[in-house]
Length: 128
Image (tube, rainbow, N blue to C red; front, side, top):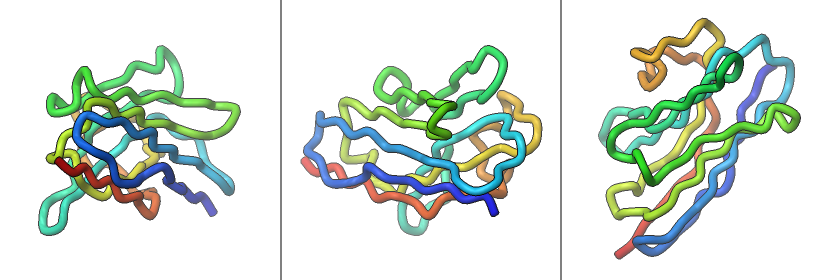
């Protein structure tokens, strides 16, 4: 059974950095994209960064994190990373990764409804 495991979360001061990891294990059918989401209590899950896992491996970002976050992948390690820099208090959330098992499109890669395989999440807390 496919499984995604996130790690790397923690507490950091504003302006600091963290690197999240999402490792895929078990039997995974072909993935078309991987996306990082975040969710605050009582709010909807929002996509922050996505990457195609084949082809040109283009990456896409929500405007709120452009220029600060970077998504990357290590196919050999079956791992996707989210490098987060210049963190702000509003980045505080539970961060989840998700695997797109059907063809991914730019217009839907950051939408939670496009994904069915999720990790358990890792908490990021940014304090001022």
